[in-house]
Image (cartoon, rainbow, N blue to C red):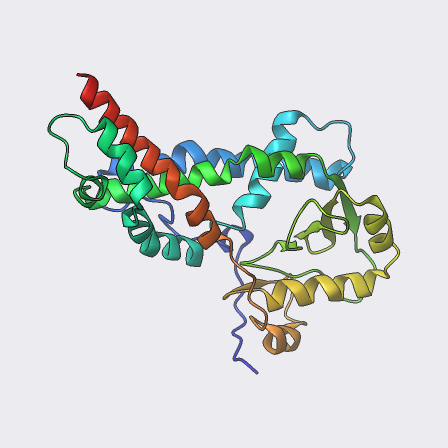
Length: 285
């Protein structure tokens, strides 16, 4: 059993890391741009969506496209933006960026402008560290803003279940999203505790959602808490200390499969395209 420390904090102190999205090595006015222009609006819109979920539930007619998309983007972002994810991204992004295959080199060679390095690998190698950092964070933001994933979540049926009357309250963690391996097949779903007595659910499978609603409240809370705590990395949050033994028994026993590596594999081509475009533009001058 792990040693678990019970610490009481204000809600605003949970899940907070200072300067998490700061572009390291950049001037202050540039370093905070991603936080100011992307993550802060994402979180602000999600807060508005959360108030609507708590007040009227997932099927409310008061949903606007902007609010619904904002909540979908926020859910997806939670799978990619935890501190450990950002640390891994920062470590591996320069390696992924430098991994240039022959096909990219051939394209670069056909459009390389005068004065540019002879190879794409050379061009990337000459990037300043702060430029590498910014390119990675911009790419991460573009991934979180994925229209494909957002559309899938937007088109799911959303439900909000009250667990008032259950024997325990819902726990949350630094890995709060419970999900299946996919989102488009029968039975695929997303779940997340959004308060000590409220569980958010989303799926395209109405029958599966109906079945979940037949589970007793205490059992539903137990299942959710088990997934959330076993998938946590470091922190678990609750409204009281009564479940500390449960947390100590299950904390981090089944770490969630992280999406960061697959993101890197899918998205590193975007930065290549940027450099190829720059080479083409230079060659035309």
